[in-house]
Image 1 (cartoon, rainbow over the protein chains, first blue to last red):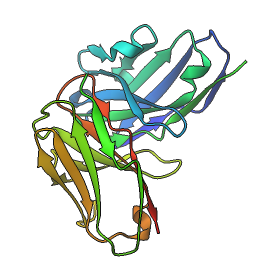
Image 2 (image 1 turned 45 degrees about the vertical axis):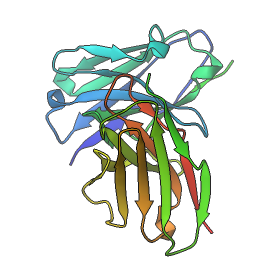
Image 3 (image 1 turned 120 degrees about the horizontal axis):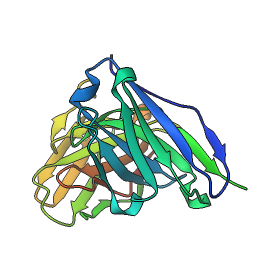
Length: 116
Length: 107
């Protein structure tokens, strides 16, 4: 069965960076894009960007350019998102999701807390 | 960016009641619309794609309709397990955008 397993919660300080992972299983990793989605507590969902695991090509929401960097490791079927120059406004749950214009499978989410 | 506006922001329904949630896009999205359900502490779950196609495993009391800029999600008979927050999402253009969500509670 299709699964997206994300890394654990992160507690980090303002100005730092964090890299979270999303390991895919149960399907051909290179056949679908992986998107990353942000959800602040009690808020709606924001699309950060997507990566094509086959080509490594990426697309970003303008709002997150310079904030998020998406990469993949095809050998381990894992997608990564690095968030840089963290501020308290980056405190949120971050989801990865399999993307074919809709998101049919989601990871369990990673809570990133930015606090001094 | 395509703006997605959902209404109402919240509602409560009795067991067996029919529930309808609306989603309006800021431009024609040619049925490139999905609906998701999210329960507290959980990831969103895909319910409907292509405006009206039911995702595998989703109960048939859920249905989607609409075209152009106006779409709706209907729950034909409210059940306890249908409580949660519902989001619409357009998949026509980048960036993908979501509605603000509708919180559905059991009355």
